[in-house]
Image (cartoon, rainbow, N blue to C red; front, side, top):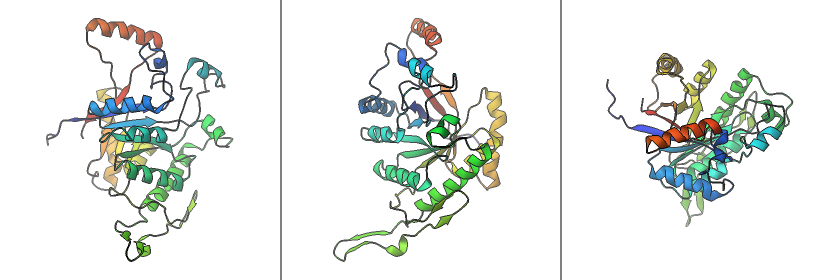
Length: 316
């Protein structure tokens, strides 16, 4: 059956740091250096909204790079992701100057607690009036483990086991307020119906979380849930929890072969949910004259890159 809507959905890939996804970008003569200010990200937000981009999405990592030498000195000296701010706070400053732009942020299931994450995103979902999205990740390096008081990082399957239970707790809390729990009857002193606000009382392998939850349910129930899925376990996790899935294919043929596998876990649960989306990345280099493109391609090679990464695809 042919697609009726061939419009692309574009998602801008951002980082709350001193450079773009390509670490040498901070050296470009045109790069703004006020990345520690809200105005820097608000300019980006306005530009994306004016350009009809559907979402600004932040990745995150809970440590500075130190794999190259075992020490952070080289990364700091060269400005290689040497600043990593909390993207959820930055996202809110961007929401203040936009009306339609979706705003997604990465939060880890490995080192945070589910009640905290549930409250954070429920609040963002209300304050942004349904424009919030959560990219669900499992932290993956020893530097992050060390920052959270761990000697070793959790194993691959253990991280996914924890993440599955994490999602059960988060969605459980989001669902403990019924849609019509709020009454707001001032005359009769009835703020909410206690019979429609429930405790979760979760007790599992990784988490114990009682409730009741402290944020009423939003009109859209919860933020958009995003997941990057490549491994078999990752695809199963995405099929179970996500509404938007980021995938990386190195060629059209690779994507054609892999896409059916990424869809298969969803089909094991029944029909693919309405609106379920796969989004591959595209590296975009834009410029007017051919001479400009040749010049900046050379500059890009010398400075190891400077361009924004966009995830996009037709709806599927």
